Image (cartoon, rainbow, N blue to C red; front, side, top):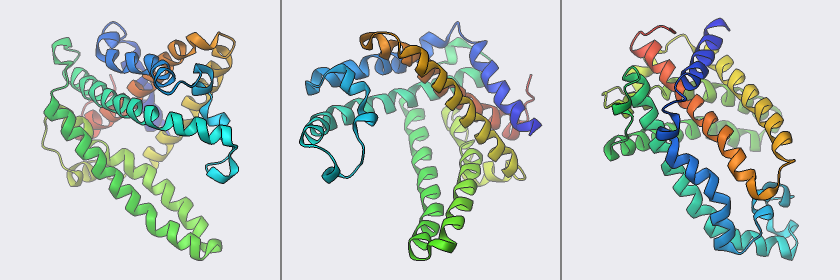
Amino acid sequence: MDKAWAIFSHAVRMVFRSLNVLPRIAAPLIILVVAGPYIISAMSGVPLETVLNQPAMMPSLDPDAMSDEQREIMTALSGPNALVGIAQLLATLWVAVAWHRYVLSGGDAKAADAPPGRVLAYLGWGVLIGLILALVLFIPIIFAAVVPALGIPLVMVAIVAAVAASYRLSAVLPAAAIGKAEGLGAVWKATEGTTLIMIVLALISTVAAFVIALILGAIFSIFPTVIQPVLFAIPNVLFTLVYASILTTIYGHYIEGRDFA
């Protein structure tokens, strides 16, 4: 518990003591998070308020459960949502790589860049980790569909294991960002014995993000719809950087042997 909190608190401090360079590093993501809903609205012809309330507008993922109006709106939004989503994903990768490089350089602003090769390596490792985790979850999910009484508890255990594994394996991402030749086997071995720490860390991170999002969502909802994307961009970008900082901290501590100073 103490080690998990140390990792999380160090990651948060890492972000807030670098606020002077944060706007420059996170600029691509800030711009796309802010502009995204406006772009989707302009491209689809759907009102901004509807764009911002897409989850609430969908009572079910089943098209047959939607009204004709809902189906028409979701069809109009599908293309713009996909394009903006891809752009935001690329911006997130760029910012994550630049952030890792900045932090691991000791705070050298000149290192806060994201060479295309490093971004592609980061994406490749991320896809590989995702495939591994999907494979870990696939068999328990199939088993749960056949034998629900035994399969559902197995799925819960698999989810917890996958969460811990994702944090351990994701230590390879900061290494990819700075061009270090660390592999999944190396980071897995370096983080041996940290499964419980990673589970608690994931729990702390999730609860903190949920509570903050709930509070800010209630506060921001009183503002006019037209400026809400600007307000929500702030926590969205901060959450992204805190998560990237958690991975940086795991890498720095377990792979490079750094402390939490």
